[in-house]
Amino acid sequence: MKFVPAGVVPFVALLLLQRRPVAGRALLVSGSGCPSHGLCRSNVQEQTRRQVAVLNATAQELFSLYLKCQGEPFSSESDKLCNPAGIFFPAFRVNRTSERKEVMVAMYKLFAFLNASLGNITRDQEELNPMAKELLERLHNTTKTTRGLISNLTCLLCKNYNIFQVDVRYGDSSKGKSAFKKKQQGCQVLRKYVQVIGQAARVLLPHLSPS
Image (cartoon, rainbow, N blue to C red):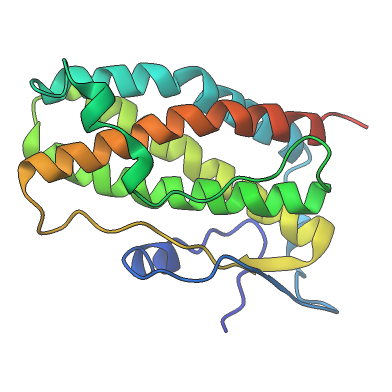
């Protein structure tokens, strides 16, 4: 098992594991397992709060724009075609009364999954809708915010709980699928994202409030 220092996101691992389901469990270390937590910025909690708030505020707009750019039948049959019931999405069972460590681990799993999924969706849209500049820009911006959030969560987990790596289960890659299936998988993930991000914000933000 490789050491992952605080504040550094294991992006290579995220990409390599993207197509392989792995158990979602936190790996704990003892002693000096997180010697780099001093690299956390002094405002890491406030920055994390802002990132979650931005993702929550822009999720519905991203989903609506995605549907618009896919054309028919997605524009008129989104309830049917974008139903996320048939796809994997990380379970989110924490609430405001959950322990802070449990909340932080659940958040890491959620946003690491989302980061990999956004990579899939962006790659597909660059192929299928290369002229959809606004959509591609929003996808890139959402990915950038998500990566920053993962970095901050990594730092907080390491600094506060000596957790330096969290195994995450990812969904299926869309590589090799038809154009229709790629569009459908994207809208299913984004629909579920809209549903979950609001809950995630409500749960996480109180845990990041100034003491």
